[in-house]
Length: 138
Image: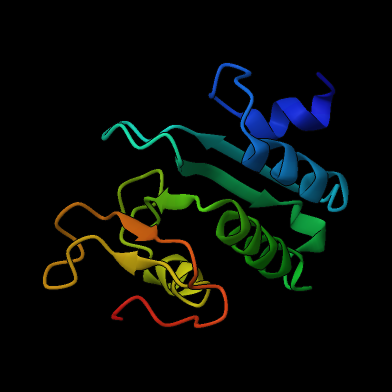
């Protein structure tokens, strides 16, 4: 497995899933970005993955690289019938970071609990939403 594939696999223990191979290729095309993907800590859906880490080199931020890569990952998830999960609401120091949640919302992610989004701070994106992006409020 190449370094790019390992970056895409994240904590998935090198398992093979066509979606992970797709993400590895997307990352090869965007060397300024780093994305870690793993199985979600809950549920048993074999076609569900969680974005655990998404980062763009600080010198390349603000150029749309991350947004284009997220849209590509969302499109690949659509193609493979994959549900994506993310926990964007809190920063590493536990502070609320709604602009990150809004960024994911533009790619079709919605809050798990729209009535109380801060409750668990988690969002998901079901296959088929790439062509109909919407904000975190739905």
